[in-house]
Length: 403
Image (spheres, rainbow, N blue to C red):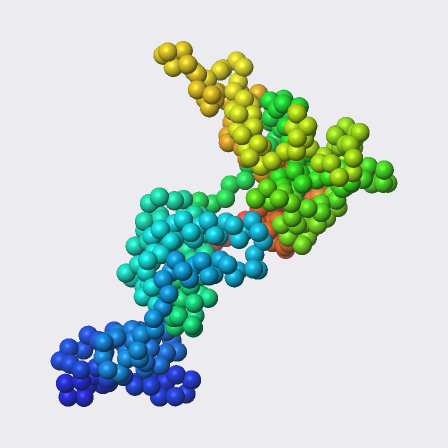
């Protein structure tokens, strides 16, 4: 940047071509802002873009495009977005049409800036939603704005600025998986009704996801083979329909232990091939909503101790969500999700000596990194026999070591 009388000239190169912008003084404020703008965009902007961003009213600035309202662009994006699963598409449409359209829908796509609109919107979201919810809204809107480039914008204002470590989004709490001991698994099973108990035992015995269990049909169970197994071919989706499992590797065959074979033998008896394996007490197929309503009261019962029941209020009323506070092993001591049964199954596999690769195949993880990140801490470290082998390779120390 150089001074020319009462003006300031900024020069840079874009793809080998010399670019130049001149701003009138006496203040160098616009020239400094233009310099920062060029550096942030790593010199990949032309003079017209700089004028449009820093001094849009000057004669050299290109005519501003008449861009659509964000609400109209979102509707077009949702209508033409066909590379998502039906459940994911419905979830994205819900997020965009509710919160994004409500807060930002009346803005023109080309007028949305990070400083004036997006950062305040992010702060409002953080006050009302969990960190994971804030991140999901941001990432979905980023996809919408990315598809507006270059037709309606020169950049995506939701992308991480160059040189910055991130977008300043709140960090979700670390994911903490719960693992049931064998004794606590029995406590949970005893607290279940017979129809829910079958689901719980099947999840503990196979490690299948909730949707995979609820989508299992009788024809997917092969108990007459040399190695009885179940074949995961479909899963119950969030919209209530059935679709493909979560990943390509989720289509898999799971070999069953003898006790799980006995469980499935009872479940599929006198059922047709297309019927669901798991049904409620009245014979209807399980749905995610029914399971959710039944699950939490069951966990509450499992967290209550017969010897130390939850305390009643002064009126004698006991909340249906109240749990015991004792340290007895005859009750569960923490919150439990249905997916934690899958984690507990892996803990049993590791205790039985299974290696992580075989566990990855059984669970249907797309990468062994996923398996290791979640369950690697359950592996034993520093086993005595391995330390003995290390000891033989280390040089012997004679006498007392000195500093």
